[in-house]
Image (cartoon, rainbow over all chains, first blue to last red; front, top):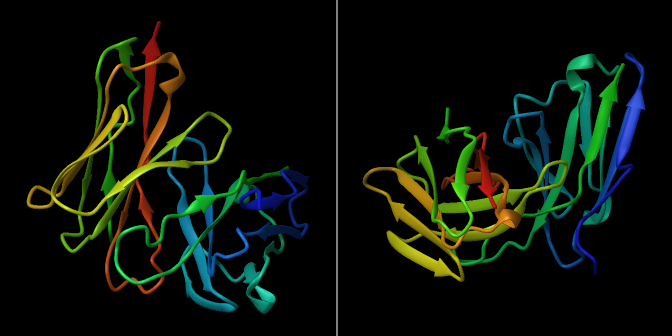
Amino acid sequence: DTGVSQNPRHKITKRGQNVTFRCDPISEHNRLYWYRQTLGQGPEFLTYFQNEAQLEKSRLLSDRFSAERPKGSFSTLEIQRTEQGDSAMYLCASSLGGPGLAGANVLTFGAGSRLTVL
Amino acid sequence: QKEVEQNSGPLSVPEGAIASLNCTYSDRGSQSFFWYRQYSGKSPELIMFIYSNGDKEDGRFTAQLNKASQYVSLLIRDSQPSDSATYLCAVRSPGAGSYQLTFGKGTKLSVIP
């Protein structure tokens, strides 16, 4: 397993188009997260899956955003009717949930998918 | 609203010096604290985490946690030019359900040869 894989790495689209990003987590990890990062900012939480269940969504995730994780494996993040403000790096991370604090929720990030909306 | 604050920098230190990076957080119930390093154009990578008051050392890196002051820091000894990056502080609070991390904006470190 080579880590968290994301594609495409770069996506340039015109305003109003739909885009979809895919994330393949580390195979034994049951938790998957999507974050968004803009220039000069830290990653901002978007949504979280435990196995196939989407358990939390940030208020940043407008109704134009949807995420899925069928069968608890890979995940997709779709943005409909893109806006210029959606331009950002979309980061996927995964972790192995477990009891206790030690080592729990150590997020491993993928390389990210950079979106540019023209 | 949980907040994590970091000085954006840039923090410039000469090669071989100690770099000190600081972070404060607003949620007193926060349990776990993480330091990630992010090179320009790359994704964050974990340096270390800490959840008990005091110091935790890993090679040239030492994380320090003071829950009473809601303060966590990262010391980098014998700084190298390859340490030049943005350092992100992240905090996990209990009861979030999702175990999501709240990140600061990061401190940009520049190690001058």
